[in-house]
Image (cartoon, rainbow over all chains, first blue to last red; front, side):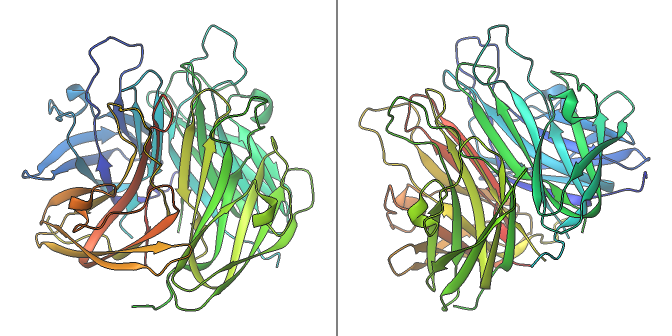
Length: 126
Length: 126
Length: 126
Length: 126
């Protein structure tokens, strides 16, 4: 019932944090990496962030308890061990874990008056 | 023609029911788990809901007849054997079935004036 | 270069045609099944439509030429051999082909003032 | 740490560039193919574009450096070796690479007042 499920490496090519608008809003544009750990053991996870013209930022640590989910906000340095990702710049993400997990990536864009949403299960390494 | 297709376990990391707005609207924010059972036998399904800081809610029963689909509303306790999921809180979902099925997850967000949509096929266990 | 790629059976659990609004608009709500046939041979395809409380509609014929794509409008009976799918009702779709193809499903919803989009690659049978 | 990950062929059936609106806007409708190359070697990639009633356009060259991402704008001929894709016409995409990569496809539609988003990981050849 608590056997571990998923894969240890997941890839997300389309990362992008919209430029925050000047006016304040009830909803902020953001991206989230949603992680599910159905196993009983805590998952020790590392994020690697890839760019178009720069060296990758590697080994950002994330922890997800056994039988827990974590929705990591990519626009919040406090979720990324203090790393602040640039806005308005394409990037891509690799998620590595010591135990199998499941990873989904979503973006909420409020650049204009109404919000837009997109999501996909990340690509697991077989 | 009626052989059973799909997988018996499906995972969805990004669950979130938007906080209902105060004003009434023709469309309510919601999430749905859409299940397809192409086999001839009824599928006996259990939903497990995972949270960030709480123990999971396990074994919510769902039934889908042979050669039928079911679109389960996650904001309707009557679809979840009376379980009311919290709003404004990240969660994740595991779907387990006794026969192979196919699972897709969609969110309709009407937090603002216009609706937004997102969808993905859930992650099947190989 | 023209070897055939993909799978012969694809599944889409979340089908739904929004109820058309009364006022006319430049964009109509619709769903599309987008098929890619990278092989050199014409694909002979059958669609099966599943419902929550009714028997499935099976064997709607579709043809896609070699090295061609086809974006099948699910709200157009002329794309479905004359079959008119009901609006405002959940359904699900199975796509079967005699040669491997690739299938993606998208919905454009214009129920409110602005459009919303969702898409996912369908679930292939391994 | 820099082993190559992903697949060498990826397929995207639902390509469509919305017709640009007459009025100028801060956001242009577009589609992007987002590529992640986690290996250390440059990826030599070819795009093939399939249509409903025309012969495919094949072998558009793309290059992505080792440990880099590239978000290819499909509405920018300068990203497609000078090829200008037609607007308002369904198409589909095949991505071929000499080393394994990961591919995601997204559309931003600003046909109406507010933007809409959709995304999916492309279909990898196993």
